[in-house]
Length: 121
Image (cartoon, rainbow, N blue to C red; front, side):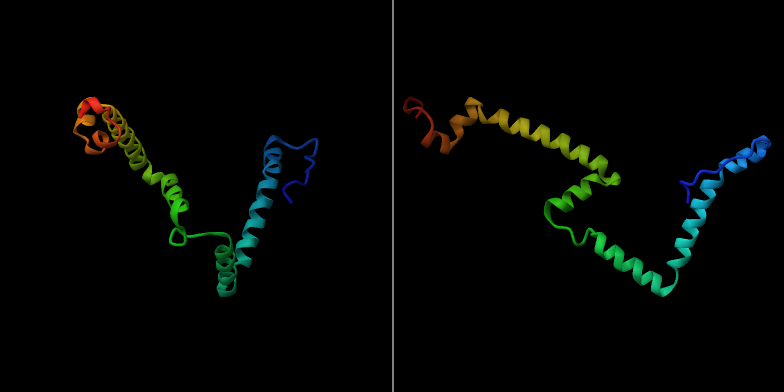
């Protein structure tokens, strides 16, 4: 009913025009109240819960990446997400930086056995 056009009378006062302009919003609110009234009571509760069960998934029903993404997007977890990302970046750079370190390669039994040139033994 909110999309209905209301013709404001020509000689209306500014106060009446402002009231007339708010009329679509009031009709929307009345429709919302009617919807809420229709969904009250035990039957309405059962209908709402059946609809929610069909259209929503709780975090207990999520598994794997879906649950991780749900947790990462939660506003309360943002500080932990940023901290996790920062620490992951630091540790990955340390790890990959140490892979090519000559001292680490000399101490690695695996590298010495399979990849080192024969002169390094």
